[in-house]
Image (spheres, rainbow, N blue to C red):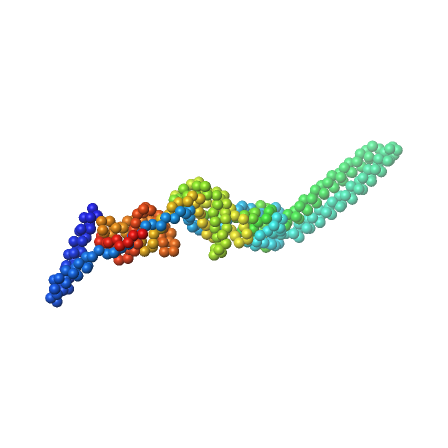
Length: 367
């Protein structure tokens, strides 16, 4: 079939050439021998050289755009209700375990604390007085100076005073606890990722005021094309950079989404990395996934790729140019990776400039 195509093409070229030469030379009375020589030169096969693909053993990799996420987050809320006095942190601040973050109506809770302290002091005085009265009544009763009912009343007054002191002590403990709770502290070390409160705002019990990313680790997430799923078998880590920084970080695989989303035909991979201070949740990450399994890749010169709508290489079949569709990948140092459509033992024309399908060619050298 290729030979027939070549013959048809040659015949067409011959016809066009004869017509053109006749038009150009006929009016000038040129020698027919000169016309024949020009025709022979026009029909001479083009000289081409062939090149074999360069075979490289390497681990396939893919570049992805990911994002930095907090490892775990905690919603910080107030355990007491009141107006917010001060907010001591901003988004992005790192805090230590127990660091103060928000103050809620400290003056009011200090007043309640002082009141509870005074009530305890009064209850203690009442108990001391009741204890002395009970002791005196016991002495009088031992001499039978007073009736038993007086002693019983003294005992009851003493017990009541003791109960009031216990209640006052409990109230003081609660006031101390609320006074301490009026300073909202970090439950663990981490970074502030959201602030939903401002000074002067009323804080209800349980309402979220801040979001804290706990720990010194972050999550790095990226979406992976479904076609890459087989390459991830055995992968336990990946590398990434932040913004324009050249520093390469390593993330340990944390989770891999078990299903491919239909809309994007991709799945999410998440890794964890120690935060060296340069990573803030919400930042973009340049993620590189490298397959743990080595594969052979084929590379040919960029000049061997046809610049048509579809990626093609040109080969020599039956002395003429033939096209072969290929799928290309990376471009590095003047070479192009052939992902599909070419075998390692096949050869292609090294420079396709000015060539088209069916043109007769002579191979002058091969590599």
